[in-house]
Length: 79
Length: 371
Image (cartoon, rainbow over all chains, first blue to last red; front, side):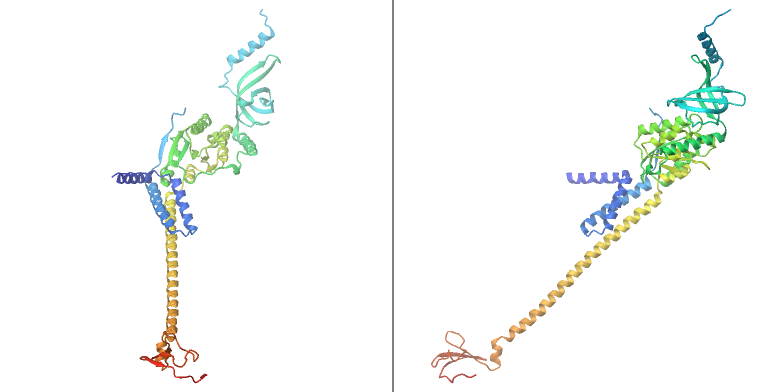
Protein backbone atom coordinates (compact mmCIF):
# COMPACT_ATOMS: atom_id res chain seq x y z
CA UNK A 1 0.00 0.00 0.00
CA UNK A 2 2.24 2.76 -1.19
CA UNK A 3 -0.28 5.53 -0.55
CA UNK A 4 -0.55 4.67 3.10
CA UNK A 5 3.19 4.71 3.50
CA UNK A 6 3.36 8.09 1.88
CA UNK A 7 0.73 9.45 4.20
CA UNK A 8 2.60 8.15 7.21
CA UNK A 9 5.80 9.78 6.07
CA UNK A 10 3.98 13.02 5.51
CA UNK A 11 2.52 12.82 8.97
CA UNK A 12 5.87 12.22 10.60
CA UNK A 13 7.28 15.11 8.60
CA UNK A 14 4.54 17.30 9.91
CA UNK A 15 5.05 16.35 13.53
CA UNK A 16 8.76 16.85 13.11
CA UNK A 17 8.17 20.27 11.66
CA UNK A 18 6.09 21.25 14.63
CA UNK A 19 9.13 21.33 16.85
CA UNK A 20 11.50 22.66 14.22
CA UNK A 21 9.26 25.38 12.87
CA UNK A 22 10.95 28.65 12.01
CA UNK A 23 9.17 30.77 14.58
CA UNK A 24 9.52 34.02 12.71
CA UNK A 25 8.16 32.61 9.44
CA UNK A 26 5.39 30.69 11.17
CA UNK A 27 4.25 33.73 13.09
CA UNK A 28 4.33 35.89 9.96
CA UNK A 29 2.15 33.34 8.16
CA UNK A 30 -0.30 33.28 11.05
CA UNK A 31 -0.52 37.08 11.00
CA UNK A 32 -1.07 36.98 7.24
CA UNK A 33 -3.98 34.57 7.67
CA UNK A 34 -5.42 36.79 10.43
CA UNK A 35 -5.23 39.73 8.01
CA UNK A 36 -7.00 37.69 5.35
CA UNK A 37 -9.87 37.11 7.76
CA UNK A 38 -9.91 40.74 8.81
CA UNK A 39 -10.32 41.81 5.22
CA UNK A 40 -13.59 39.87 5.28
CA UNK A 41 -13.05 37.86 2.11
CA UNK A 42 -16.30 36.07 1.28
CA UNK A 43 -14.72 32.77 0.26
CA UNK A 44 -15.94 30.15 2.71
CA UNK A 45 -14.04 27.24 1.21
CA UNK A 46 -10.79 29.21 1.26
CA UNK A 47 -11.63 30.39 4.76
CA UNK A 48 -11.99 26.84 6.03
CA UNK A 49 -8.67 25.89 4.48
CA UNK A 50 -6.95 28.89 5.98
CA UNK A 51 -8.51 28.29 9.35
CA UNK A 52 -7.23 24.76 9.36
CA UNK A 53 -3.75 25.97 8.48
CA UNK A 54 -3.94 28.62 11.21
CA UNK A 55 -4.82 25.91 13.71
CA UNK A 56 -1.77 23.89 12.75
CA UNK A 57 0.46 26.95 12.94
CA UNK A 58 -0.85 28.09 16.32
CA UNK A 59 -0.32 24.65 17.74
CA UNK A 60 3.19 24.37 16.32
CA UNK A 61 4.18 27.86 17.47
CA UNK A 62 2.80 27.29 20.95
CA UNK A 63 4.54 23.99 21.43
CA UNK A 64 7.75 25.48 20.05
CA UNK A 65 7.53 28.28 22.64
CA UNK A 66 6.66 25.98 25.47
CA UNK A 67 9.22 23.31 24.73
CA UNK A 68 12.25 24.77 22.97
CA UNK A 69 15.23 25.75 25.10
CA UNK A 70 17.89 28.29 24.27
CA UNK A 71 21.14 26.80 23.05
CA UNK A 72 24.33 28.43 24.26
CA UNK A 73 27.74 27.52 22.93
CA UNK A 74 31.07 29.21 23.26
CA UNK A 75 32.96 29.93 20.04
CA UNK A 76 36.57 29.37 20.96
CA UNK A 77 38.33 28.70 17.71
CA UNK A 78 38.22 32.14 16.23
CA UNK A 79 40.43 31.70 13.21
CA UNK B 1 92.41 61.76 23.57
CA UNK B 2 89.61 60.45 21.44
CA UNK B 3 88.25 62.40 18.50
CA UNK B 4 84.65 61.74 17.36
CA UNK B 5 82.96 62.97 14.24
CA UNK B 6 79.67 64.85 14.83
CA UNK B 7 77.75 61.92 13.41
CA UNK B 8 79.57 59.53 15.71
CA UNK B 9 78.83 61.77 18.68
CA UNK B 10 75.10 62.00 17.97
CA UNK B 11 74.92 58.25 17.29
CA UNK B 12 76.76 57.61 20.56
CA UNK B 13 74.29 59.75 22.48
CA UNK B 14 71.26 58.09 20.86
CA UNK B 15 72.63 54.63 21.64
CA UNK B 16 73.26 55.68 25.19
CA UNK B 17 69.68 56.92 25.53
CA UNK B 18 68.41 53.63 24.22
CA UNK B 19 70.55 51.67 26.66
CA UNK B 20 69.55 53.58 29.75
CA UNK B 21 65.93 54.47 28.98
CA UNK B 22 63.08 52.05 29.70
CA UNK B 23 60.32 53.03 27.26
CA UNK B 24 57.62 51.04 29.09
CA UNK B 25 58.76 51.58 32.63
CA UNK B 26 59.25 55.33 32.60
CA UNK B 27 56.76 57.99 31.63
CA UNK B 28 57.11 61.74 31.51
CA UNK B 29 54.23 63.72 32.86
CA UNK B 30 53.56 67.29 31.81
CA UNK B 31 51.25 69.65 30.00
CA UNK B 32 50.73 69.62 26.26
CA UNK B 33 51.46 72.76 24.25
CA UNK B 34 51.79 73.74 20.57
CA UNK B 35 50.00 70.58 19.50
CA UNK B 36 49.78 70.17 15.74
CA UNK B 37 49.33 67.50 13.08
CA UNK B 38 51.21 67.92 9.81
CA UNK B 39 50.68 66.23 6.46
CA UNK B 40 48.00 64.09 8.01
CA UNK B 41 50.56 61.78 9.54
CA UNK B 42 53.00 63.51 11.91
CA UNK B 43 52.15 64.83 15.32
CA UNK B 44 54.30 67.47 17.01
CA UNK B 45 53.81 69.06 20.42
CA UNK B 46 55.72 70.28 23.44
CA UNK B 47 55.51 68.74 26.88
CA UNK B 48 56.30 71.20 29.61
CA UNK B 49 56.13 72.09 33.26
CA UNK B 50 57.16 75.20 35.22
CA UNK B 51 60.86 74.60 34.71
CA UNK B 52 61.35 72.90 31.34
CA UNK B 53 59.97 71.71 28.04
CA UNK B 54 60.72 68.87 25.66
CA UNK B 55 59.75 68.64 21.98
CA UNK B 56 57.71 65.56 21.20
CA UNK B 57 57.15 63.68 17.97
CA UNK B 58 54.59 60.98 17.23
CA UNK B 59 53.13 59.07 14.30
CA UNK B 60 49.46 59.95 13.94
CA UNK B 61 48.47 56.27 13.64
CA UNK B 62 49.54 55.69 17.25
CA UNK B 63 47.38 58.47 18.59
CA UNK B 64 43.97 57.22 19.72
CA UNK B 65 43.02 60.13 21.95
CA UNK B 66 41.92 63.63 21.05
CA UNK B 67 44.78 65.69 22.45
CA UNK B 68 44.76 69.43 22.77
CA UNK B 69 46.87 72.12 24.33
CA UNK B 70 46.69 72.42 28.08
CA UNK B 71 45.94 68.72 28.70
CA UNK B 72 47.95 66.93 31.33
CA UNK B 73 49.37 63.69 29.94
CA UNK B 74 51.91 60.96 30.49
CA UNK B 75 53.99 59.98 27.51
CA UNK B 76 55.83 56.72 26.85
CA UNK B 77 58.60 56.29 24.28
CA UNK B 78 62.26 57.24 24.07
CA UNK B 79 64.40 60.37 23.66
CA UNK B 80 66.34 60.85 20.47
CA UNK B 81 68.52 63.54 18.87
CA UNK B 82 67.70 64.19 15.25
CA UNK B 83 71.10 64.04 13.58
CA UNK B 84 70.29 66.55 10.87
CA UNK B 85 69.08 69.30 13.18
CA UNK B 86 70.89 68.40 16.39
CA UNK B 87 67.68 68.78 18.31
CA UNK B 88 66.53 66.49 21.05
CA UNK B 89 62.97 65.28 20.82
CA UNK B 90 60.95 62.60 22.50
CA UNK B 91 59.56 59.88 20.22
CA UNK B 92 56.14 59.08 21.66
CA UNK B 93 54.69 55.57 21.40
CA UNK B 94 51.75 56.02 23.69
CA UNK B 95 49.93 58.80 25.50
CA UNK B 96 47.83 58.49 28.61
CA UNK B 97 45.61 61.21 29.94
CA UNK B 98 46.12 62.21 33.57
CA UNK B 99 43.19 62.84 35.88
CA UNK B 100 39.50 62.25 35.34
CA UNK B 101 39.04 65.88 34.34
CA UNK B 102 41.40 65.55 31.38
CA UNK B 103 39.91 62.21 30.39
CA UNK B 104 36.42 63.63 30.46
CA UNK B 105 37.51 66.57 28.41
CA UNK B 106 39.09 64.28 25.82
CA UNK B 107 36.00 62.11 25.85
CA UNK B 108 33.76 65.11 25.23
CA UNK B 109 35.96 66.12 22.31
CA UNK B 110 35.86 62.61 20.85
CA UNK B 111 32.10 62.46 21.30
CA UNK B 112 31.71 65.76 19.45
CA UNK B 113 33.97 64.58 16.65
CA UNK B 114 32.20 61.26 16.15
CA UNK B 115 28.82 62.89 16.42
CA UNK B 116 29.78 65.35 13.71
CA UNK B 117 30.80 62.40 11.54
CA UNK B 118 27.35 60.90 12.03
CA UNK B 119 28.34 57.82 14.04
CA UNK B 120 25.43 58.31 16.42
CA UNK B 121 22.89 59.32 13.82
CA UNK B 122 19.48 57.93 14.86
CA UNK B 123 18.38 57.63 11.24
CA UNK B 124 20.87 54.86 10.54
CA UNK B 125 19.90 52.71 13.50
CA UNK B 126 18.69 49.31 12.40
CA UNK B 127 15.86 47.41 13.97
CA UNK B 128 16.25 43.92 15.29
CA UNK B 129 13.88 41.19 14.12
CA UNK B 130 11.03 40.67 16.55
CA UNK B 131 11.90 37.00 16.99
CA UNK B 132 15.67 36.61 16.65
CA UNK B 133 16.82 33.03 16.14
CA UNK B 134 20.60 33.29 16.31
CA UNK B 135 22.74 35.87 18.05
CA UNK B 136 26.40 36.50 18.92
CA UNK B 137 27.14 37.49 22.51
CA UNK B 138 30.36 39.27 23.36
CA UNK B 139 30.84 39.24 27.11
CA UNK B 140 33.05 37.82 29.78
CA UNK B 141 31.90 34.29 30.55
CA UNK B 142 32.71 34.81 34.24
CA UNK B 143 30.82 38.06 34.55
CA UNK B 144 27.58 38.71 36.38
CA UNK B 145 26.49 40.56 33.25
CA UNK B 146 26.70 37.32 31.25
CA UNK B 147 24.78 35.40 33.91
CA UNK B 148 22.05 38.05 34.13
CA UNK B 149 21.68 38.27 30.39
CA UNK B 150 21.33 34.51 29.93
CA UNK B 151 18.96 34.17 32.88
CA UNK B 152 16.57 36.79 31.52
CA UNK B 153 16.71 35.40 27.98
CA UNK B 154 15.90 31.93 29.33
CA UNK B 155 13.01 33.27 31.38
CA UNK B 156 11.49 35.05 28.42
CA UNK B 157 12.18 33.06 25.30
CA UNK B 158 13.02 29.66 23.87
CA UNK B 159 14.78 28.27 20.84
CA UNK B 160 17.38 31.01 20.55
CA UNK B 161 20.91 30.04 19.54
CA UNK B 162 23.47 32.06 21.43
CA UNK B 163 27.13 31.97 20.41
CA UNK B 164 29.32 33.34 23.15
CA UNK B 165 32.52 35.12 22.17
CA UNK B 166 34.28 35.39 25.48
CA UNK B 167 36.04 38.73 25.86
CA UNK B 168 38.06 40.63 28.40
CA UNK B 169 35.91 43.63 29.23
CA UNK B 170 38.22 45.86 31.22
CA UNK B 171 41.85 46.91 31.28
CA UNK B 172 44.40 47.32 28.51
CA UNK B 173 43.34 44.25 26.56
CA UNK B 174 39.62 44.97 26.54
CA UNK B 175 39.46 46.98 23.33
CA UNK B 176 41.34 44.41 21.27
CA UNK B 177 39.50 41.54 22.89
CA UNK B 178 36.03 42.93 22.18
CA UNK B 179 37.05 43.96 18.65
CA UNK B 180 38.38 40.50 17.90
CA UNK B 181 35.10 39.02 19.17
CA UNK B 182 33.19 41.31 16.83
CA UNK B 183 35.38 40.37 13.89
CA UNK B 184 34.99 36.66 14.71
CA UNK B 185 31.21 37.04 14.88
CA UNK B 186 31.26 38.48 11.37
CA UNK B 187 33.15 35.41 10.16
CA UNK B 188 30.84 32.96 11.93
CA UNK B 189 27.56 34.67 11.03
CA UNK B 190 24.91 35.22 9.92
CA UNK B 191 23.45 36.48 13.17
CA UNK B 192 20.28 38.44 13.79
CA UNK B 193 22.18 40.58 16.29
CA UNK B 194 25.47 40.92 18.09
CA UNK B 195 25.18 41.80 21.77
CA UNK B 196 28.07 43.39 23.64
CA UNK B 197 27.55 43.65 27.35
CA UNK B 198 29.26 44.10 30.68
CA UNK B 199 28.14 45.20 34.08
CA UNK B 200 28.72 48.52 35.77
CA UNK B 201 32.10 49.70 36.91
CA UNK B 202 34.15 52.76 37.64
CA UNK B 203 34.75 55.43 35.04
CA UNK B 204 38.23 54.02 34.34
CA UNK B 205 36.99 50.45 34.03
CA UNK B 206 34.46 51.45 31.41
CA UNK B 207 36.90 53.53 29.37
CA UNK B 208 37.53 50.77 26.78
CA UNK B 209 33.95 51.31 25.61
CA UNK B 210 34.88 54.88 24.76
CA UNK B 211 37.80 53.84 22.63
CA UNK B 212 37.59 55.33 19.17
CA UNK B 213 38.62 52.12 17.39
CA UNK B 214 35.98 50.04 19.16
CA UNK B 215 33.31 52.68 18.61
CA UNK B 216 34.12 52.77 14.89
CA UNK B 217 34.08 48.97 14.70
CA UNK B 218 30.60 48.92 16.23
CA UNK B 219 29.48 51.63 13.84
CA UNK B 220 30.82 49.59 10.90
CA UNK B 221 29.30 46.27 12.03
CA UNK B 222 27.28 44.54 9.33
CA UNK B 223 25.33 42.71 12.01
CA UNK B 224 22.84 44.88 13.94
CA UNK B 225 24.42 45.76 17.27
CA UNK B 226 23.07 45.96 20.78
CA UNK B 227 25.36 47.32 23.46
CA UNK B 228 24.61 47.47 27.16
CA UNK B 229 27.22 48.66 29.60
CA UNK B 230 25.85 48.91 33.08
CA UNK B 231 26.73 52.18 34.75
CA UNK B 232 25.17 54.95 36.66
CA UNK B 233 25.78 58.22 34.90
CA UNK B 234 27.52 58.16 31.56
CA UNK B 235 26.52 56.53 28.33
CA UNK B 236 29.57 55.11 26.62
CA UNK B 237 30.34 56.00 23.02
CA UNK B 238 30.09 52.30 22.14
CA UNK B 239 26.45 52.36 23.23
CA UNK B 240 25.76 55.54 21.31
CA UNK B 241 27.13 53.99 18.14
CA UNK B 242 25.11 50.79 18.59
CA UNK B 243 21.80 50.23 16.84
CA UNK B 244 20.14 49.52 20.15
CA UNK B 245 21.29 50.49 23.60
CA UNK B 246 20.38 48.66 26.76
CA UNK B 247 20.87 50.32 30.10
CA UNK B 248 21.95 47.07 31.79
CA UNK B 249 22.59 43.47 30.70
CA UNK B 250 19.12 42.62 31.99
CA UNK B 251 17.49 45.42 30.04
CA UNK B 252 19.43 44.28 27.00
CA UNK B 253 17.96 40.76 27.26
CA UNK B 254 14.47 42.23 27.56
CA UNK B 255 14.95 44.29 24.45
CA UNK B 256 16.38 41.38 22.52
CA UNK B 257 13.61 38.82 22.97
CA UNK B 258 9.88 39.18 23.66
CA UNK B 259 8.23 37.50 26.63
CA UNK B 260 6.82 34.18 25.46
CA UNK B 261 3.75 34.60 27.68
CA UNK B 262 2.84 37.73 25.70
CA UNK B 263 3.41 35.95 22.43
CA UNK B 264 1.38 32.91 23.49
CA UNK B 265 -1.47 35.24 24.39
CA UNK B 266 -1.12 37.00 21.06
CA UNK B 267 -1.29 33.69 19.18
CA UNK B 268 -4.47 32.76 21.05
CA UNK B 269 -5.97 36.16 20.23
CA UNK B 270 -5.11 35.81 16.56
CA UNK B 271 -6.60 32.35 16.48
CA UNK B 272 -9.83 33.26 18.25
CA UNK B 273 -10.17 36.34 16.06
CA UNK B 274 -10.04 34.07 13.05
CA UNK B 275 -12.59 31.77 14.60
CA UNK B 276 -14.94 34.75 15.03
CA UNK B 277 -14.35 35.82 11.45
CA UNK B 278 -15.03 32.33 10.22
CA UNK B 279 -18.23 32.14 12.25
CA UNK B 280 -19.28 35.49 10.80
CA UNK B 281 -18.54 34.15 7.36
CA UNK B 282 -20.64 31.03 7.95
CA UNK B 283 -23.41 33.13 9.47
CA UNK B 284 -23.31 35.37 6.40
CA UNK B 285 -23.75 32.34 4.17
CA UNK B 286 -26.57 31.01 6.29
CA UNK B 287 -28.34 34.35 6.11
CA UNK B 288 -27.90 34.58 2.37
CA UNK B 289 -29.29 31.09 1.94
CA UNK B 290 -32.21 31.89 4.22
CA UNK B 291 -32.91 35.00 2.19
CA UNK B 292 -32.84 33.03 -1.04
CA UNK B 293 -35.12 30.42 0.41
CA UNK B 294 -37.57 33.00 1.72
CA UNK B 295 -37.58 34.72 -1.65
CA UNK B 296 -38.31 31.47 -3.45
CA UNK B 297 -41.13 30.66 -1.07
CA UNK B 298 -42.73 34.05 -1.61
CA UNK B 299 -42.38 33.71 -5.37
CA UNK B 300 -43.99 30.28 -5.41
CA UNK B 301 -46.85 31.55 -3.27
CA UNK B 302 -47.50 34.48 -5.61
CA UNK B 303 -47.35 32.16 -8.61
CA UNK B 304 -49.81 29.77 -7.05
CA UNK B 305 -52.28 32.58 -6.35
CA UNK B 306 -52.02 33.73 -9.94
CA UNK B 307 -52.56 30.22 -11.24
CA UNK B 308 -55.63 29.89 -9.02
CA UNK B 309 -57.22 33.03 -10.37
CA UNK B 310 -56.44 31.91 -13.93
CA UNK B 311 -58.09 28.59 -13.23
CA UNK B 312 -61.17 30.40 -11.94
CA UNK B 313 -61.20 32.64 -14.98
CA UNK B 314 -60.88 29.71 -17.34
CA UNK B 315 -63.61 27.86 -15.48
CA UNK B 316 -65.95 30.80 -16.03
CA UNK B 317 -65.55 30.28 -19.76
CA UNK B 318 -66.57 26.65 -19.60
CA UNK B 319 -69.64 26.26 -21.96
CA UNK B 320 -71.22 23.53 -19.86
CA UNK B 321 -71.67 26.13 -17.13
CA UNK B 322 -73.60 28.23 -19.64
CA UNK B 323 -75.79 25.25 -20.63
CA UNK B 324 -76.58 24.75 -16.96
CA UNK B 325 -77.99 28.27 -16.86
CA UNK B 326 -80.54 27.31 -19.70
CA UNK B 327 -78.68 28.41 -22.80
CA UNK B 328 -78.28 26.02 -25.79
CA UNK B 329 -75.61 25.60 -28.41
CA UNK B 330 -76.54 24.99 -32.06
CA UNK B 331 -74.15 23.03 -34.24
CA UNK B 332 -74.40 22.02 -37.93
CA UNK B 333 -73.76 18.45 -39.04
CA UNK B 334 -70.07 19.17 -39.30
CA UNK B 335 -70.05 20.11 -35.68
CA UNK B 336 -69.43 23.81 -36.46
CA UNK B 337 -71.13 26.43 -34.33
CA UNK B 338 -74.26 28.00 -35.84
CA UNK B 339 -74.31 31.38 -34.13
CA UNK B 340 -75.89 33.64 -36.77
CA UNK B 341 -79.19 33.76 -38.67
CA UNK B 342 -77.10 33.98 -41.80
CA UNK B 343 -75.77 30.46 -41.25
CA UNK B 344 -79.16 29.12 -40.17
CA UNK B 345 -80.77 28.74 -43.58
CA UNK B 346 -84.25 27.16 -43.57
CA UNK B 347 -84.00 23.37 -44.05
CA UNK B 348 -80.49 23.15 -42.43
CA UNK B 349 -80.26 20.10 -40.21
CA UNK B 350 -78.76 21.00 -36.87
CA UNK B 351 -77.94 19.52 -33.54
CA UNK B 352 -78.94 21.42 -30.41
CA UNK B 353 -76.81 20.79 -27.31
CA UNK B 354 -78.79 21.18 -24.09
CA UNK B 355 -77.86 20.84 -20.38
CA UNK B 356 -78.23 17.05 -20.38
CA UNK B 357 -77.69 15.97 -24.02
CA UNK B 358 -78.26 16.73 -27.69
CA UNK B 359 -81.37 16.71 -29.90
CA UNK B 360 -81.55 16.79 -33.72
CA UNK B 361 -83.67 19.50 -35.41
CA UNK B 362 -84.17 21.36 -38.67
CA UNK B 363 -84.35 25.12 -39.31
CA UNK B 364 -87.94 26.04 -40.18
CA UNK B 365 -87.63 29.64 -41.14
CA UNK B 366 -86.21 33.04 -40.25
CA UNK B 367 -87.68 35.80 -38.03
CA UNK B 368 -85.21 38.43 -38.95
CA UNK B 369 -82.72 39.99 -36.57
CA UNK B 370 -83.43 39.64 -32.91
CA UNK B 371 -81.35 42.56 -31.70
